[in-house]
Image (tube, rainbow, N blue to C red; front, top):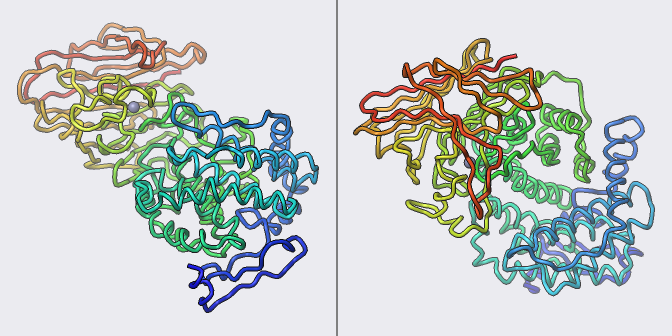
Length: 605
Ligand SMILES: [Zn+2]
């Protein structure tokens, strides 16, 4: 490799500046001939700091965000040193806290000049560089720690002593980049099709660029590999920007992709065409669409129960990259409405709010290779708006539940229909998918806890795929039809679910049609945290304990004579208990031939 460096036609010799006086002057390979010589150069630059400082006095939102970062840094300064303590097989919490600390402290130092932040950041970086390792057996831990150390090193480089630089650089190499080197060619995630790809490559890009002038071999070898291999996972943003692993993992994957892309841009002046990834220009909208008016997300695919919308600064990065003010305005408004605290990358990737009127339609079909979503709402501005999200997709995709056709519903400021979300990742067989997989024996992961039809009281077919066979969106009464035939193939020769918004987009009609092959029970279920009262005439009413002026009326339109029942969603340990959650059910025994179940959900008040 050294020979390649020597022979490379383009040499970039670093000027021997005062701060670099001890660093060896080294010829860089052609792949790094545009490397920005000064630090910081990873996402934050001196030019960006100057720009933000100039803007701060006239932009109260930016001023608030910077002050929030400094306030958080004040609490971080006094925290106890990190220790190499694993939770289960993971060091991830420590890696995340290290990034949290270095990014807050380094940014606070740039804006305040107070040496206590510099000292605390340096101490934190040295502490983790003294760990025996960064837990390479669970490689996300190495990726995230490398990212956190690299950002601290780069952002504070001009202010660190040469001794500290060398010490931290050595830690970043021996515990980070050399670990990448050991496993990269055989690492499953290198060409992986999920968030690990973006996280591990994001960390690799940032870490290798942090030390590229002293140790160019890492960036020279691995940045081209990262650029070549990111598409194995990035392809799932196509065509509409939805992320198949659900909104929770959207933030994780997209943040690390943003770190990598932003670092490439500021350090090398190019994002290496990652910005042309299909769907990426729209992906900043994904959190906006998949977060309901209650601020709870559409939490499919192992997203946590009661997860709120993300405030990921990746939305600012995407808004800047694609000059899209609707995305950045959404994030500003959401942070304001939820009193969310700004974090360092809200400042680094800051985009000023504007008064422009958003041009975002009410309904969306987000197509994806593994999950298609339809999301419909009555308003973008009314916090009591009706919002319904429904998913199709592939029951065998990573993090999937057996939930084809499942929906979640907000109206009147209440989440009426919910997904219980993930269970404990350490449950025996949690990752055993496929036909008869143990994963499906857990209540939260199988069909019986989801807002889907249930035939024969059994799970959907574990390998089923479903698609939206038709949609009529952004019309006065929008609807979407799913073909669920594969999901219920053991019982029904054809199965569809149609979800419509009616009555000025306020009410919802869910129509399930089957062609049952031999007599079986047909059921309809909806999981809710709200209280349920069964009324006569096939009706029920749901009430929220806090928002007492709003209710949801459920009515069985078809078949005539069917009645709602209430079932418990309670389970026992080691599964999650689902305390306070119940199921609104319809069960109709011995159905055969054409069967139609039609339920109307009407928000009242
Ligand atoms: Zn689920």
